[in-house]
Image (cartoon, rainbow, N blue to C red; front, top):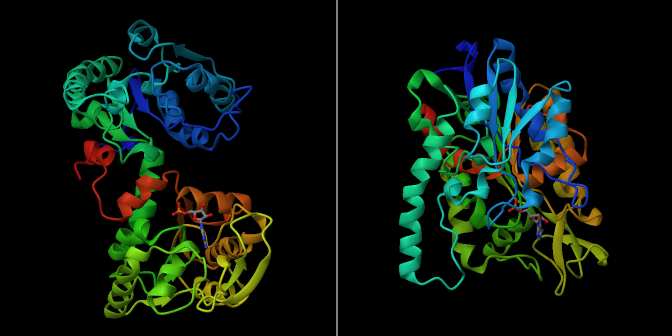
Amino acid sequence: MQMINDYSFAGKKAIVRVDFNVPLNKETFEVTDDTRIRGALPTINKILSDGGSAILMSHLGRPKAGPDKKASLKHVIPALSKNLGGKEIKFADDCMQAKQLADALKPGEVLLLENLRFYEEEEGKPRLADDASEEEKAAGKARVKESQKKFVATLASYANVYVNDAFGTAHRAHASTALIANHFDEKNKMFGFLINSELEAMDKVIRSNDKPKTAIMGGAKVSDKIQIISRLLPTIDNLIIGGGMTYTFIKAQGGKIGNSLCEEDKLDLALEILKKAKEHNVKVYIPTDAINADKFDANANTGKSKTNETPDGWMGLDIADETIATFTKVIKESKTILWNGPMGVFEMDKFSAGTSAIAKALAEATANGAFTLIGGGDSVAAINKNKLADKVSYVSTGGGAMLEYMEGKVLPGIKAIRGE
Ligand code: AMP
């Protein structure tokens, strides 16, 4: 597999799939958080400083019916230019009409293509009326499959080399994340620095023998996390459970959970996880006390109880002090840690203390030499809210992609380049 570090882009035109799916101010369309743009800089800078030119392509938002001003990548130009030291960014208003601009690019220049998802060919899904018949759906699918070939070939025709640096969409088999790679030979397709560091961080957690190894799984549902938990059980020492899924475990063990979130059809699954954990000698930590609310509301009345004695009419929305103390101790004693999913409804101030405490414990563990990987939109938001992003080892840019990789699934965007 070609490594970007060993490649010289001198005199080459590189088409780079970046993830510029950034949040925009709804009125002014200014970029409100440029983290994803900054994530692509090492790759862009390497191409330019080698003496190559960069053709950047991305999606933005979810335009469902062709060009849409709100989702134009034009809005990204000022933030991108600023991050590249004021560099001029050339722009192609239509990603399918960029050949002339691409051909005219000189070494050191940057061309940004308009949103790929203005074309249905990017995702390969036909855009149909809600009431489309089965025949119309089948015809639409066949049509897009055919026109997608031209779409991919056109993008590939702009460049001599393809770089994928969009980890956030690596789990999608889209034109720009997977199919385009077929148009380049082994030596002229590669991951960018961002994808490389994401893979390195995840592989480190999966393969590391630095023990104790701890997985912290929070968030709303057991069903979303079951596959990653199953995959990790043979390799971890501790499993910390938090968030809404706590109560499926508590109820499965006969506890009283009041109105707390519970997946009634997953009670057996929760017991199965506990059994499997025992077989693998994994210690499972389930919250023992909670901050309860009388309704799911930022201004709800609050109280505290054991998680298995939640009063009728109340619901557990955060972990409380005894649990925080137990979890913090386990985290601080760990050497390899994966965290995915909040410990409570951290979006509401009254129920955010548990998640913040875990974020702080991770920062302390990192300072003590642990390798800490944080992934999933909500845990990343919690780390950012606590201003701890630079105090942990790695913060993943891809929630869904990270979960799928850690579950052992083959990601189309990864397979297209390294073959697995
Ligand atoms: P996920 O996307 O599965 O990681 O879930 C994240 C969501 O779970 C966040 O929006 C949290 O507000 C929510 N959540 C966390 N703890 C609880 C809880 N105890 N009850 C209900 N929702 C929760």
